[in-house]
Image 1 (cartoon, rainbow, N blue to C red):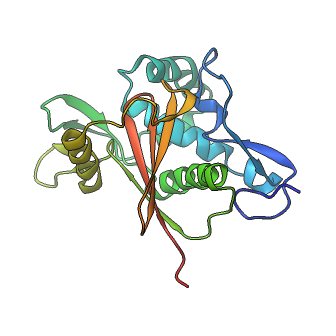
Image 2 (image 1 turned 90 degrees about the vertical axis):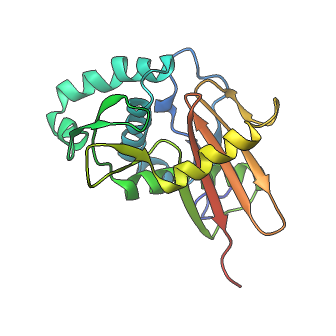
Image 3 (image 1 turned 120 degrees about the vertical axis):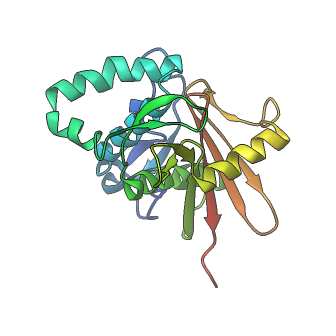
Length: 217
């Protein structure tokens, strides 16, 4: 009998991971699913949309992310003004570390981390055929810290670690990433004797590291 990827209880449905809403029409080939109970399949759809929108807006120069912004997000904002307020939380004009001018807003980092941790747990279950019970630390290369002295933004300290890693060692060799829609989402695991890390990449450039911390025995 199948188990839920998240809690280990009996599964009675399937969960897409990442959520189906990330994938534009025409780029939904063999979407990844894992067994799930109804609770952990249905309760986070609003969070899935929120995180998709955060990621798509942050890299809207990517054609697929831009498609999501134009075809999904903008239309939804007109129908739900309260959601616009959510995406304009502490909205302010800023200057990025490359000198480019932009508009920034404060995200709900706990919501972001929780949703991406859910995807990480699902992919762990798919890869290792067991429910992960430990903690997961989520870090990204596309989130910024605001300089308190001026209106500049710099990639946060964890993002700098990711960028330094990929600038030093390059991206993973061809064939390392998994996923049948790599322009939208791809991933791979890194294993050492002491830990496991998952690298997820959305829309070709928004990289997320999920660091698995096993429960203490």
